[in-house]
Image 1 (cartoon, rainbow, N blue to C red):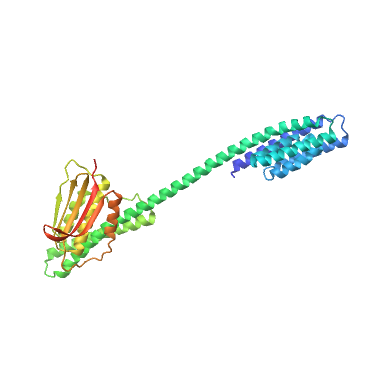
Image 2: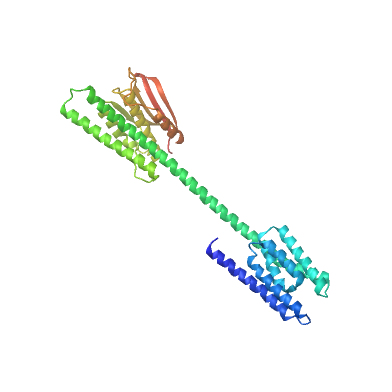
Length: 377
């Protein structure tokens, strides 16, 4: 409970007590014909009933019952009765409210029988009419409070669910970024491994070739370290807005150049119309297919030529790559097949399909990787 709400409730309590005391004073002012003892009892009981209203929020039913007992002794607690009935109605069920109203009507009938010479039926109907007003008002206040609490709970639940969805999206985005960086990192590491292997198996290369190979190894090792640092930064900080590479179709030439430097002959057939521009997501997926294919070719069939290309086929974009199969079938870099698993998931999420495996072509038995992506209108 906020401080402002607590002060507001205390102000209402003071106002309720003041209202009850005013009725005590009005009853005391009209005590002609009453004995002094009865007048004192009425005033004392009336003031006591008014003071009890200070605890009406904590014990609404108990205070209402106590005031009903006081109503048997004097009608000076009439104001306090109205406040007590309102409090019960605004906090308890309508059944409890009805029982409290009936109890106070019975108390007024007993008071009439003992102290007044009036019609019991008239007093009962009058009490019921007066008590029904605060009871109805309290029920309306209770309904309004329940609606507000329900709306507040729904808003809090919606905010919590929104925060949970946002955190889930951020987690998925971090995972996607890490996968993309993992692919680039595997590409660089395979280049480093192949160039280092070239230095190992060709001890007769000249100084200029050694310098070129060493420069390539250094640049790719530096790039691998940068990629690894960026992966760790994203996963630790959770910041998905960090600058990161977004390669696409235009970067395929750089992939081919790196592969040719590593000793792999690559033939790329670009059959895409000049006026057809791929969306950023599709462009990244095409780049990823070519990258994974070239990386696998260098790992499992080093030195053998590679053919790849991209072309529209009706309502789809076909990306393909095929390479010869090495007789020794060795890998210079250990593989876990996670690259192909991630690539398959990426293409399926994009609404495409993928096929890969050993196949026959015009040049003989090859390893072929093909993917089809939805073609933009």
